[in-house]
Amino acid sequence: MYCEGLQALQGFQFLTALQELLLGPFSEELNDFPLTISANDDDASSLQSKNPLILPCLRELCIHGWAALQSPPHHLQRFTTLKALHIWNFSKLTELPEWLGNLTSLEELSIRECKNLSHLPSKEQMQRLTLLQKLVIYHCPGLKESCSRDGEEWPKISHIPQIFIY
Image (cartoon, rainbow, N blue to C red; front, side, top):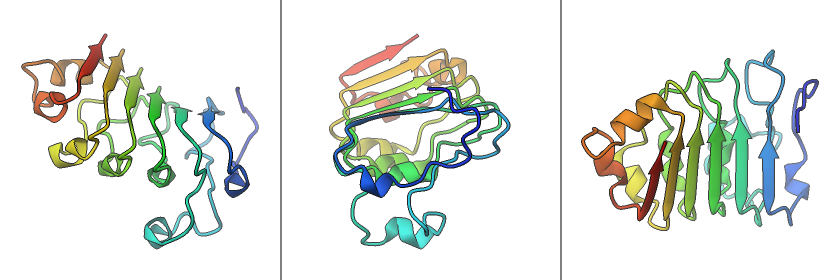
């Protein structure tokens, strides 16, 4: 879905049975991802609070970035039931955020077309992803190099059974 005029995504708390979600691509004129979970979602303390799970049935999420974005939306760390996360086209992204380790239900992580990405979260955070069975890296030249068996990121991912780097 291409959401050229969309300025914000709201009301996710009402989609309690949603299992799969594709967000983007959006208008390249936006400076930030237009995702609003709740009224206080920009408040860091609300992300750590005991609020009910947002999208408690969400199992698969695909997010498309664009040239202006430097990171995936921080709101994603609240989707703790995710089994598959697909991150596409974040061309300014150089490293994945540490909070990725909070997604402990992840079984599959796919990173595509992030041309400047070369670093994963810390080894400690990556090892928190104990259910992660599959890692796909596609058209990410920096990550392709750093995640090779001789690369500096290899110790962070060597425990993952299926690793595909293209």
